[in-house]
Image 1 (cartoon, rainbow, N blue to C red):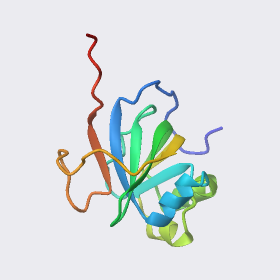
Image 2: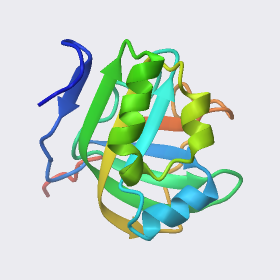
Image 3: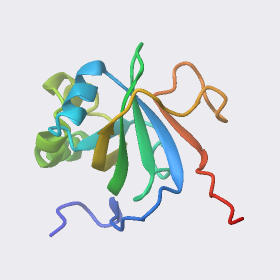
Amino acid sequence: MNAFPRGLFICFSSFADTPSVRHVAIIHPEYLDLILAGRKRVEVRLTRNRCTPFGRVAPGDLVYFKARSGGFGARAIVSSVDEFESLTPPLVAMLFRRYNAMACGDAAYWIRKQHARFGTFVHLADVRSTERGPEYRAAPGFSPRSSWIVLRRAARRRAS
């Protein structure tokens, strides 16, 4: 049963066999460690404005995780995405109770984000360690302040 008002909750639940879009998520190093340890199974992005990754990430996509001021450390397939809009502080508190065990956020994060209006909750599967990731600095819309970069669709191999 969904406890959110009608029109607030959007869920993508299918899982594609091959990634159609690649992403680079810039995260704090301690969260990268939690992803690799299997404890952090959901990446949370709460924002005041509708911005990436809201509406831009889907099941089957491939996300590379890069530590802030560091290198790549993990990659994962998106198993599902939960998106929320028109959030209020009480709804953000409800999301904290619902997701934080899987997201491993600290209380300070949720307090800072209590006035967010949009939420993207990316469920991770098939997490693997990697020291390499895609080149992302030339991606459309990239800026040094970007924390989530959507890359173009993954190249498909041509049959010979």
